[in-house]
Amino acid sequence: MSKYLNILLFSLMAFMGCEDIIPDTTPPVVSIEEPNGGDEVSGIVSVEVLANDNDKLEKVELYTSVNGLEGTSTLDAFVHIFDWNSNTIDNGECGLYAVAYDKSGNSTISETIQVTTFNMVTLTLNNLTQTDVAFQFGSKS
Image (tube, rainbow, N blue to C red):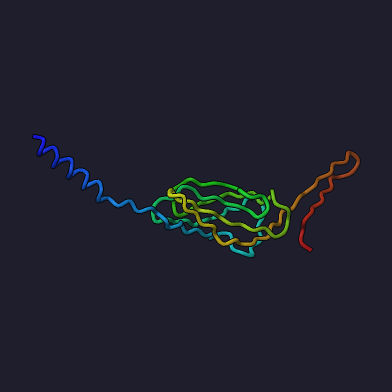
């Protein structure tokens, strides 16, 4: 009986020892598809990020060069959509980039795209003796 037990234990150890655990060192691939670099944006902007990994994604994050982290997606999906509120940025140039992380701790930063934020502010003044007057700031000249 002990002979068979020894054979069984040896076989089990040999089988378990044959499994080579190869660490995942392949980083994800990530890019911003929309908006395009050079676009003028305003209000709530739909930012489309494509991310892929050879195994599984852990998360994808959207960043601006002004405010830092703007949103996180934990979907293990190819397409990630972020609704970015460009009203939080002063009018002018702003960089957008994404970072993708996989389950093995690898990460990749996308290229930074430059967009121009252009958000208008409307100020309405009410006067009891005059008609309403509206001023618009940030309009193009």
